[in-house]
Image (cartoon, rainbow, N blue to C red; front, top):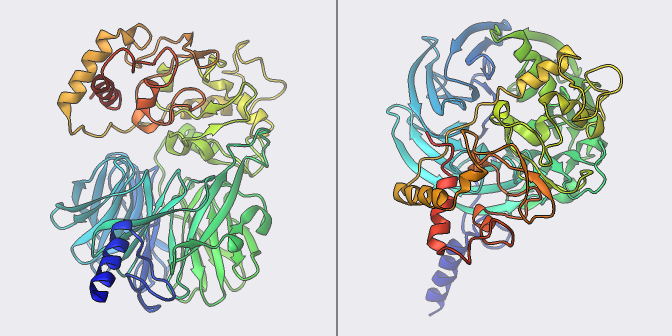
Length: 580
């Protein structure tokens, strides 16, 4: 009977997903401190430490750098918008996720050429080699991590995860996953190939592109931003906070008292993006992509050993095998900053990518991602803080002058004027007002700006025009392929029957007018495209899920008039938009 009871308790633990090792009893044993760890990044170091490779997202290439000579060996075209790169098969191959076209490139290092390109899904990000045959890829668009055979392109496993999986870290049988907007961390136990536990690092944690494991101390590092959306007084220094959360892997507990609060440990910085850990000196190296800095933090004191200005938009960092050098990948600038960690001095700045994009697009990317340019902000906030990759941060900000406002996506802006929920902007150049009012930049044009619906801001400043033009460059992903086409077809019929097109018409499915739909005032008709990426809904986010739009009180309430099955069909149709 006692043995049966023990078996039953163990099964209960498995079912509930509690599986991280504790001091007394646990289901899974953590790997030994000698077990190698891996983490996904824009930059990868070869096993012998003699070579580095980086993903050049603006140039659709990767660059291989010889660290003995600090020379670029090759720049190799891959897919559209490459983000993350990793070595495989004893450094003979490179694996590259191409976010723009949803593919994985396999590159032969010796031949310096792509030998295979495989479709993997929507918005691939993190990639990590598992063995000589397979790798893990995080798919933000479909909320899953896949295992793919990179010799054949066969997807051998699909592991559902919480929303927006991004960064990956591998330690023995444990695969850790960061989630971009929610600040959550998931643990995938590989013998079971499923998420066994997900923890929240803080309800305001956001922007979690990377995850790094320190196997010696059994700790995990999450570079993140804390989005203070509940703040009723949105000032530049009380809105976005840069942090690195530390998780104890023995129980998946967040060490809140050891959290690295970079604005106090170092100085105000924007968007911590990647981390490297020197376990000998207990130093944590953090690249801050919005403020173009490297923070070197003493984990034991929580204070900065140094703050080093690097290039534009640093997104990746690797330490040499002896920890004597730090290599920082500056994604927009297309360069590698090499730092001597003993002297804390920059020893080289190496151009690694022959940028071929238009100069205006490059300047626009810098303006959108920077928090260090005093015309844009004060090191605290960048445009990308809420709209990374043109997406919505999924938050409702309470402190706007007109009341709570739900963050929109930045797709299709050329066809969706007027802008803001209250139609308060008639042109994208009115972003000048947001820069001055919320980000507390001095602005991109000289003098006093015009009223939002007054004389135009366009053509008053070259850089403002460039930023406005850059906002039009975000390419939306295709909606996930439906598994129930008959339900989508039925939903389209419901849409037509209810005459939804009276307000939601044209390619953008909007009429450009303000309406009172029972939510507390008149608001601009939003586009119905990309709803699968823009929860919550309504101007104040009162509808957590799209289904709630048709159940909550107001002009959109349908629950009393049509069957619930028709509402579910309508939701399925709306989530499939725009139609291919």
